[in-house]
Image 1 (cartoon, rainbow, N blue to C red):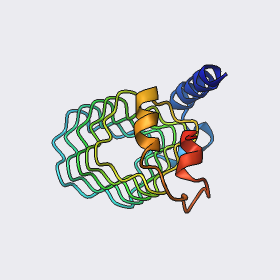
Image 2 (image 1 turned 120 degrees about the horizontal axis):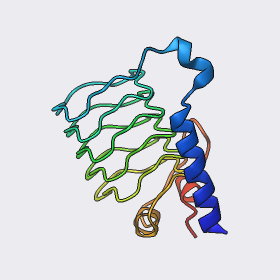
Image 3 (image 1 turned 180 degrees about the horizontal axis):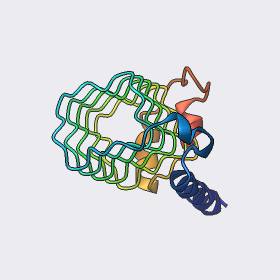
Length: 164
């Protein structure tokens, strides 16, 4: 049953990425592309970067605090010690991302794809991982340190990860 639920969430995420925010499309410019960029310690805090692409980028020490990153792609990027506190990463693709030492506290990662990402020393207090796609080993690792309640969604980190 858990596999079916995760597969359904994965398919919904892919559909959302293909048709990201169609009703609001006129309100936003075409997606920004920062693929392969060197953005170490850049400040994107509070910005709206929906559907932007940061694939294979160096985002070490970059500040995305309270940014709107819905549908944003970070595939294979380095985000060590990045600040994502309070960021909305709903429908995001953070697969194969190095999040060592990053701050994901109070972030929303609902329906995000996080397969094969690294969470060593990552602060996830109050993060909402509802329906996110994670490897079993990742869930086990994250459940060991999960705590808090997301201030925007009201969901506990442990519940969003399905911790027992």
